Image 1 (spheres, rainbow, N blue to C red):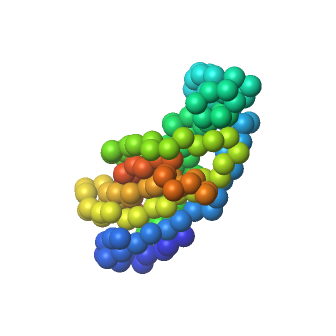
Image 2 (cartoon, one colour):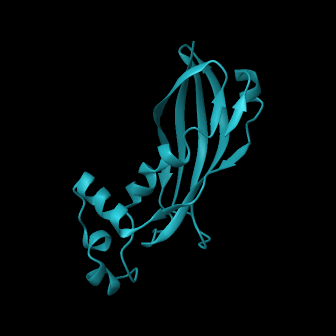
Image 3 (cartoon, helix red, strand yellow):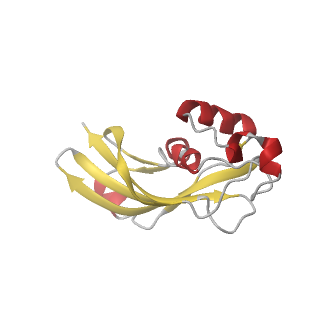
Length: 150
């Protein structure tokens, strides 16, 4: 995790990149996400049928990749005096490549902008969810967080 002593130091780090650890996307995780979202499409939860389908096996939901942003990208940057970070939203989300079952993914997070706002600082990260051994990313999104200070 990158730690900054001030908002000015954070703002000076625009362009900095942090990378998370790899996370396994196994069938159990995919099934639990399907249960949580009521999205039980066969390409996600039916290994036998999916083996004969366009991807040669089950794939993770695109939104599962996106749902991993808090675990993979949040907390990569910290500023002294910050009391909390709040998810402010997402811009320009894309899912360029499916995530095959039993793949590992990680987040590459780049600080794109730091903007002072009345309640703190709004930080935009360009987050790329990479798939181990695959050139195209699983997801790309601009993740916006509000950092609130004391």
